[in-house]
Structures are given as structure tokens and as C-alpha cells.
Length: 246
Image 1 (cartoon, rainbow, N blue to C red):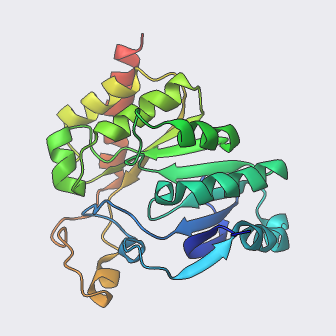
Image 2 (cartoon, rainbow, N blue to C red):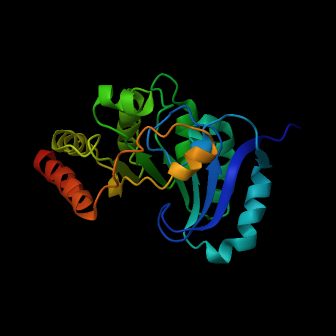
């Protein structure tokens, strides 16, 4: 019997910003998007680094589970690149009573082929959906991809009533824009499954990593977003959600 292996970038045993509680966080290798502000460019490539089976990951979790009261979070990279492995991983953890959370951009979703997504959400307690930009043209500039499938994934999760946290990185002169923030809030108002809204202020702490990887950091001249601007961005989105809620 062939044992399916996942291509793993790294594992963090006490994650505190990847879902509710203290989490066991698995970073998957490989991502099709090239977000200009990405702080994990070392997860982009699809080359095999550290292959692990579901049982190997679960055994590692078992050895530290007393410190990971929140459960399992799988992030990346883009976890949906390895959806078959992800399904098996979540199935194993759910069978053992562990809360499962998926941190994703949803970029690989396709309404024409939902069978695997239907299977995955059977074992998914929470989705943290990262909406990069609400405007499609600006999204392409920011990530290299359309946001069409991401927004469709958001609607799909809403229809399936899967608890979802929306995450949005606010970048000066890119997403920190009243028009776009209001449009995002208007879209979110159409969803019925949102449990939290995480506004993530842009920072440039990945600059050194880009230098080490000999990669050009396109936002090197962009200043970090201030705390007051982050609060303002959140207020604009919330205002639009309240005003447009059906």
C-alpha cells in the first residue's frame, strides 16, 4: 500500500496567532501566488523538502499536545495545493477529537470540481480565509492571480455554514484605501458564517529573508501600517458590513 506523504515546510508547536488557543501549526510547502508582502517566500517553491506521513505528524502532535490546547492549524504556503494529504490529515486529527483549522487563500477553489472540497470540510472546524484584495485588477497586481475563485470559495463556505475567520492584510497605498475597504465590507455582509475579522497591519520584517533568498522585495519602500490606521481600516469594513447586512 502506498502511504501518502505531505511536503512539509516546517512545524510550530505553540502557535498563538493561527486560530483559537495555542495551536499545533503545520506549514505546507508550495504556493501558486506571489503576494508582494508575503513573509514566507521560502514556502513558494514546490520542491520537496521534508516529506512526512499523517501518522508522523500526528505522533509529533501527541508528544506536545498538552501545550497545544487549541488544536491543529494547517497553513503554508497554500495547503490546498496538497488537498489529498490535507483531507487525510484532518480526518486523522478529527477522529482523535482535535479541533482543525485551515489557513488558506482559497485560490485553488473551483465550483466545477467541489468533490474534494466537500470531503475536506467534513473534517474542518474553522477556515481562516485570507482575502488579499477585493478589487480583481488590484488583486492580480498584488498576487499574480484573480480573486474570482477566492470570493467563490468564501460564498461556498457560507453556503455550507463553515465557521470562517476573514483575514485581510492592510498595506499603505494598496489595500489601505477607503473605497476598497468599504467594498470588502459590502461583500462580507453577504456571508452568513463569519465568526471573526482579523485586520493584519502590513510590516516589512521579511525584508532580510528576501535578501537571504536573493529575491527582490517589491515593497521595500512601503512603510509599515500604523496601529491607528489598522483600527480605522477595521472600522470602515465593519461599518460597511453593518450598513449592507441583509
